[in-house]
Length: 493
Image 1 (cartoon, helix red, strand yellow):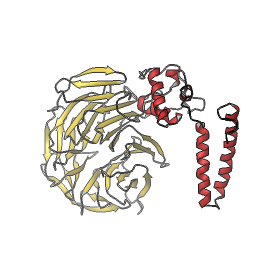
Image 2: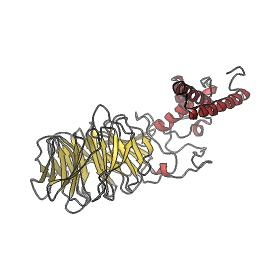
Image 3: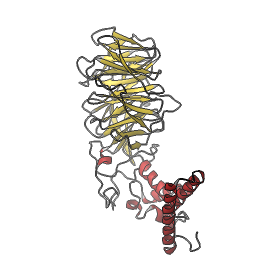
Image 4: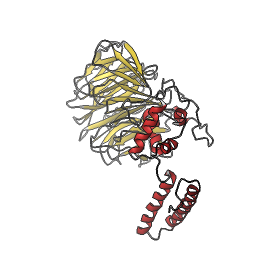
């Protein structure tokens, strides 16, 4: 049965906690913004949000093990997550994001989950060698397929027609399952372990990949290989079809994410774009990528504990979302709103309102944050606490801008001045902790030194010589200004 949870709320500072009454050990914590929640570098919004999330960033905890998979349902109102603790957690997306149920049934880690189109069932695959279908309302397993002889790493559901399922396993096979049948209707043989799998838009093709670095395209009707996609240099960990069904997204342990052209009669070189910036770690986790709902952006988790988001056309990294304390294994985009969800080895989920990042700026330069005389409603930190945190970080050797970033990302404080009445630098000056050399001047000097070292090795680099002249002139102008204003001694050189 899916365990129904009746939650009671006990709020303190910026954290709301929902604790079930039925079990002492069950925990479901909802972090609205992250003051002393142990969540480092979580992003907190500072402008008007464009989604129905209760807060710009929400942290969901309750799993007792690593989370490998997460997904919104088709309406975007429900969330499912699963992982090492062998359970599938069900959450409400909106309000306090309550964990309203837990589905049990697998006897080993749940590797991947997907909602049915009507949100009444969940498809799952597990390290217990099985593929299953669970009824969301009752929590009962309505189908269990046991055709694999090893860990089932990945599964996917067809977009159209009957909701047939495809699975990839360490037993070197990819199997297609029909809910109306007890046995696999098709089996495709890999030479090595298969780690990821995906259906085509029409469901007539299956894309699978494994530790041989090659993506194989199978014709379901002919039960044979149609063609292969080669380019990755290490294990392919995740595959995802684009919203329009014309491209395939893949992630690999070679630290690249690739987009492939899978349209019929495409050119021989089907690799369209290669993206870098989301490294894999020593854990060798199966990290899965995803598309935005309009197909203009892609996202992928990373071993560096961030979610990386790229612009598809330019291949530019738009954002690296911090917050997690472990490898980010799965990412999903809300089907209707600008919300990104991530699942991590640190046993937590994050919901991030991306709309605030796409809103036009309101400041003087159309990008600067406008000054607010009053702190946002979610900030409960007192002025004395903020000053204390600033001084402690300064004693650790952090610069004023680094301190500002920590206060913003870890404690949800967008502007120190709106709480304390003073900027970070003025607080440091009054405490005798201000840096001897102004931060902007220090960085220019550091840059000039770096270019000088480069020129010692590359004496013919005329472009760098010109850049050095410009930087040094800026250093002299800034130094004169700071001497005049008394921030530097007259004898400083």
